[in-house]
Amino acid sequence: MSKSVWYPLSRPEEDKIKIGKAQGIHLYDTRNKEYIDANSGLWNVPLGYSNEAIKAVLREQVEKFSYVNPCECESEASEELGNLLKEILHEDIDKIIYACSGSEAIEVAIKLIRKYSDIKDKSNANGIAVLQHSYHGSYYGSMSCSNYDGSERKGYGPLLSGIYELSLPFDKDYVTVCETKEWRAEKEKKLEEELAALKGKIAGIIFEPILGSAGVIRLPKWYVNKLVEFARKNDVIIVCDEIATGFCRSGSMFAYEKYGIRPDIITMSKGINNGTLPLAAIGVSKKITKEFSDKFLFHLSTQNANALCCASAVATIKELIDGKYVNTVQEKSQLFRKKFDDEIGKTFSQVYNLRSEGMMFAVELRSKDNDETLAFYDLLKIVELIKKNGVITEWSSIEDFSTCLVMFLPYIITDNEIDEIIQKLKKSLQKIIN
Ligand SMILES: Cc1ncc(COP(=O)(O)O)c(C=O)c1O
Image (cartoon, rainbow, N blue to C red):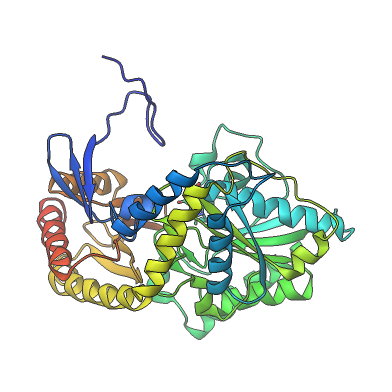
């Protein structure tokens, strides 16, 4: 029988794993085959499936009400979440706006940037700078700001105009050449030239402090400092996209903290409510809100600020804080790294390196003669085989840049479960690479 549902990033007739039950870090299909979810859903279930505290809060909220019109009403849950987010964000953040997905949060950021420049009588300077190979979402605005490998945007144009791309400070072999004196001077000069060409043209810069979809790539501190320095001199808004990195994922509550910067806008989603219900939040600084004191922002979905979504986020963030997950993430990250290096890194010549940032991992894979990235087809075979062996992982592949196996491990993973993943990875890799 033909299928009725067309799932994301899939062909219309594609079959998926039909899940019957999900508990902790495990998924069970309807035939009861068990999988370890080493990807935390799509990076949004850090506390695992079927979390008791979240379920309790949802039951309580559903008894009171689930939905109220966000243009007329507020809820205790939406206010409590706003206060909690302000506590964990930097102190310049003044207001929280709610949205229903990471992509929608980026639409809000784009509108804030453009409207801010209009209010300040600089509507000619309404461009937005983004970074090469970044991913910010799949709606028209967020897709226009993304250029993961370029091919995904083909055929959907016209996209938003006024989006400018800055080069990343990496080469094909960036992991090894990184940070020699000459290399850095060359990259700094390039960035300075690119920014100088955008002076008077852009009103905002949107970036992921650690590129997630491109394969867990952390921006160097000097690079981020240069972006911020340019922004401060030219009244340009800095947006940190923390949709993937937020809520302890990279080993700090937010990845921007590692750079000592105070972004004007912070977009958040994924881990915010452990993937329970669709929710995103946008932190907006005083610098922007004060310009809107007699204006409203034209952005709305009738679903924004849903009380159930917000209540599950309150429960999630409280558990992240109370459980000191910032520490847990760092400890588990080091443990996974050590076991990976001992059992896999030293065993396979085609495993080029493991990039890790907290519970974000990317295993860079090379061709047999070790001078090129692994063929895309082989990468897909590896991911499929690992899945067959009971572990769900993901891939990232950008031609002439990076080819890697990606894992965003759940924070609640035990040491034994880490061992189990390592053994299953090893067993699968043995069949395909050297
Ligand atoms: C950094 C980043 N921004 C934005 C998005 C888009 O979020 P969503 O898929 O919830 O629309 C993602 C999703 O992977 C992401 O990783």
